[in-house]
Length: 123
Image 1: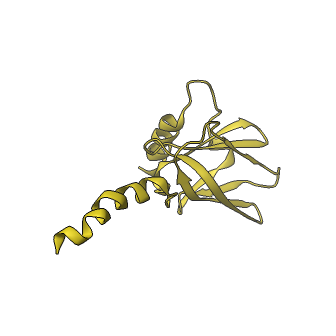
Image 2 (image 1 turned 90 degrees about the vertical axis):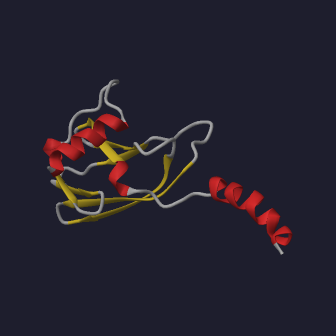
């Protein structure tokens, strides 16, 4: 009976590797390109952000990464425009950031650095 299902063990891992999957939101990093633009990065494993859900209400912007996956040949950075009225950002399901507290992006500022910054805020 084990011989019947040998194909399952061969192809199932390939199926999982090839699909987009839900992100672990604790790996989302954010930084500011300018006063009116944010950059979003995913610092988990080798995946990149594929889809983002953005909701805006009153003075708050809620950012949630919907799916991540294997990087394409040309990885896409996610840039989010900021209206002047936005003062707070909700990211990673529950972390609330003041817009002025988000650090500026630099060449050294990567997703890992953004992750360290968000961990420091949550302590």
